Image 1: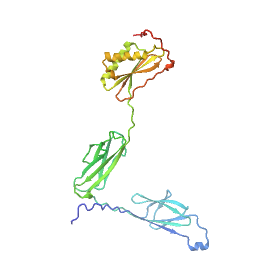
Image 2: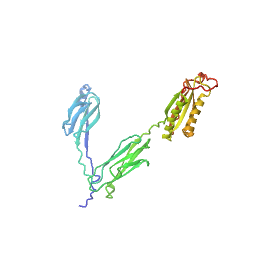
Image 3: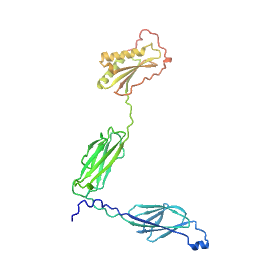
Image 4: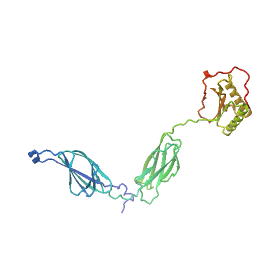
Length: 341
């Protein structure tokens, strides 16, 4: 017959005829001649083809439509909402302003959609995807194609930005995309569907996108590994041995030692505590001195040493003194008071 197999493309004509006619009836000359009082209400006349459609006026069921104009009288003047449920389940809705003493007519002719011709080209193509995901989630893009041809379809996907990565499904109708590191960006997926015929009408391009909100940055913090108050040197060495093992297990970490002098400790006590702990770690446990940070924390009720293990890039710990410097009464320099073992 010489008809191209793709000639049906473009004939998906949706016939949906909804004709609406309004009529306005004015008071007759006789009415004016008799000088009768103008009615304080209005009238609607409604007709539909086909008849028997559910009718609502101002949200209230008002029976069914008829094939002839049927009067609905004594409606208050002003706007009224008419809703008619069509045979296909859709609703026809209109707002009609009805003046007092007037008649308005509504006539509806409904014709259902004509059957859609079978598509020998991939048409239409619909893409589905989540509108938003969290950074790091896997996004699924899926294509739905109306196609009745016999040739295999070619699916060509591209995603942007460039660092968005297709994990699986390339060349198929469904792909998954890794959103890791794309916080604050919109990922755009573009799909070209082609039946390989060379007919430009049979090459469809569709696009959709997914937004990945920026994840609030959370500060990395260290952990308080140990705190020793009024400790003997032997007790402190045992605790520092545990610290050395922890640092050895994770070479990326560092340690912060924060020393506090007691309210009545001798002057310079916190510095001596720090030096003693550092020397033990470096000389006896062979910890690299560059991984040790010493902080004079001020004063507490008693001598204390806090030990922190801090990952690379973490926020350094801050001293937490409990006694104001002006309230401390350092003892005079003298021999080191011996702590019980």
